[in-house]
Amino acid sequence: MGAVKVLDADRPGYSGDLTQDLISDVRGHEVFFGTHGFEVNQVSGIAHLTYWFDNLSIGSAVPIGMLWPGDSIVPLFVDYIVEGSEAIQSGKLFAAFLNVNFGGAVSLCFASHSLGARVVLQTISGLTTSLRVRRTLLMAGAIDDTCLTGEYATAAAKIDEISILASTRDEVLALAFPLGNPLQGIIDRGHPYYRAALGRNGPAEPYPPPPRLRPNWQIPQALAYGHHNYLPGNAINGRYALPVDLPAENGGVPPNGTPPQLANNDQWQPAWSAAFASTRYE
Image 1 (cartoon, rainbow, N blue to C red):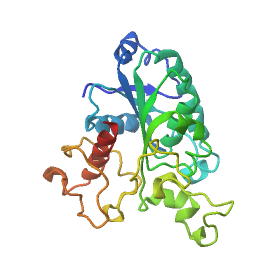
Image 2 (image 1 turned 60 degrees about the vertical axis):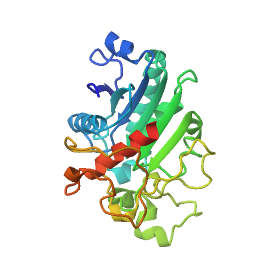
Image 3 (image 1 turned 45 degrees about the vertical axis):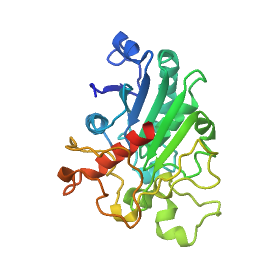
């Protein structure tokens, strides 16, 4: 894959981002956007997305990293309550930027991690109907499990196919949402104060109608996917053979097909998430 381009979602179009080369590159091509989660600064965001994109197989799509100021406000479990104002504002700005400058793209795809789900869904909700969103992958979504039929139903309706990766071993979302904390015995599904994370158990029913929502999103507990296992902290030195799908709950750890050079370190998890994203992209 060629060099990953990077756009700042809170200031898209500044002179360092918007160039004639970029506009030319996306014209007539699909564009694949990826964005990071909360408590990630600019340097780390660029690194994580670049390493992950380098492990993707997305054909001739143009890879673009979306940065947003997720490291500039209060901790996640507080920020979640105030609805991620930075994520919402970044999504609004990025949608306006895409509407003006990406009309030449054939279609758009998005992948997000953590609170980046809100950035992506807010962006999509603001896109004009002339911009087709073909695929979206929400990994470890730090957003309500009702978002696709509630707050962001309009955005979901604009997406051809939605994929999700969720893990009940996500320690961050366990602290941020009642489903994972001691109150779950008091505040349960159906209670007006119940709020569960998309990135722990997947979407709440009723689901968006098929084929919009792809089945299979729950990562087996044995794979121990924590909140920070989806994107790599350094270069990944191996790839899974495609296609991959969620392994069986009682399967091997790491999953069958894991490249030998990744089997004895923590790189297999972001490599697997990249392979899952690549498979769902096709």
